[in-house]
Image 1 (cartoon, rainbow, N blue to C red):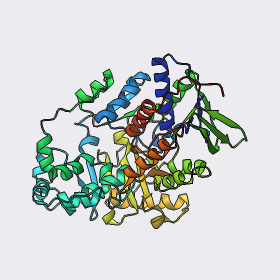
Image 2: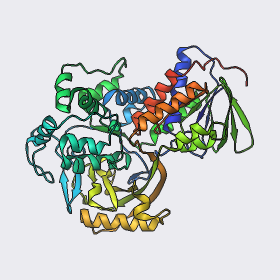
Image 3: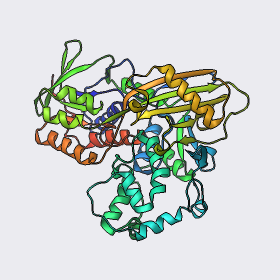
Length: 479
């Protein structure tokens, strides 16, 4: 038997790829998925009504790169192509992405010509950042924060007003702590190998770009041809994990909800015991753990305290999501994706997504306010009441967007320890964790956002990679 821990997108994707490999290998795979809650989908969750959608977690997916194209391949295979709602380059949500600085909203440059123009809050055209990189000295380093790297190569304004808010939007983190390898690994390597980003770019300009050996589906080809910026799924992003869940069940995967594993005991290199909350022990040949690193640490610390210590070292942050629906005939906002707030502004919110512009079939005005992240406890305390977060969100909406109306409907959701922080040294730590597993011949593979990227595409590709890299587990022995 092969077991998957966790029914979020990582666990569901692991099941999907195990089934695909099982079919390709003509093997008899007995597969169990154990989820501690009563719901599969992890942080992806949608509240649906006839007038609006409230996304409790992610709402859009990027189609770019190998990982993005891989997700589109999966989506087509699951039969979801006709449900895709793309945002193309000419859409306001693609062109209008804003930051809130000095009590004003500013649209970030989104075209080539805008790079040569002066755009507030930047004091110079962004092209000057390239000149800064050319004249900046080379500094040999193993890793660095993304803030320090960008400040060193492109200047403090780019670090403060472009990179720092972007990190808030992606992982609700502090750019001064997040590893440069999180988003700019290639640029960092250009600096280390060639002495600067521009120099590295010039030397790599003639390298062909491709999706590797990935065979593209018709949906992936369409996304490339139409140059999608992002996309979502009609009816809510929850449709994606729901469809994955159904696919597993239809292919005889045993999905057990409300099944909390309390301890993992590694018997030998091909046998692992999973002790659950009902006093029942399941024995598997191999385990794919897609649960957060801190949850896995609790399960293995009795037998492998060194491994648990490394897993505990991966930090996570809490984010509050406040969804707001205004039932008005007139749109209360200008069409845009939304805005982010640089940490230097010391604002109580991270940013706002304009869902009624990004998500189809919305009536009225729908907004999502994000709060907390790295600064959650500092700004709101350990356990703030939901009504307090609602009041803060509404106050900021009224101040920044000048919305005087009261929301017709609203929802507050506190996502505790939901996003891992890839701080300086993260990738080396993950390498040490996986090396420990390999050296000790532990029949476990680590999947998901704790290790290989926090985005939807990263999580899915992590599952694919770990299934392909794992020792053969398709010929299960009796348990």
